[in-house]
Amino acid sequence: CCASIARGIGVVADGVDECRKVCRDELRKGAHAIKIMASGGVASPTDKLTDLQFSNDEIVAFVDEATRKNKYVMAHAYSSEAIIRAVQLGVKSIEHGNYLNEDAAKLMYQLNASLSQTIITYVALREDGEHYGMPKKLVEKVGNLVDAGIHSIQVAKKENVNITYGSD
Image (cartoon, rainbow, N blue to C red; front, side, top):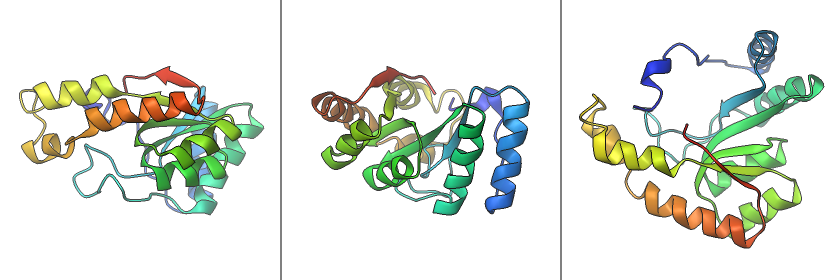
């Protein structure tokens, strides 16, 4: 559940210099894109979904490094605040985006950013997360993400945002 089989592929980076270093290293290893955490996550035991992650300067550092290699940055983001901030700073794909509102969708369209919705992930977590070892507290965190995700797709579609399928 929620990348449990992929432990170790994520990297913690603090500060602009460390973000640049981590990004460069991942690009050297062949990454086609860089995924950052612009907000808290379901499987994060200490984060709220609405928490903002990374400073503006740190996000810009990721975007700068990726862009110079003709790559892009995608951002794990739930709230419209996190989405707007990430897209304004140059992020090209929003992963999840369950609380996308009209203002965020309009900006995404203007700046040619895509929405990669991952509703199937929340359905699976809600139905089988505990069975596969996810703590009940984290399963409960999924809350209304399925319904919110469906609504976000409707908002994105109305504003002509490019929508892709994602499975996280």
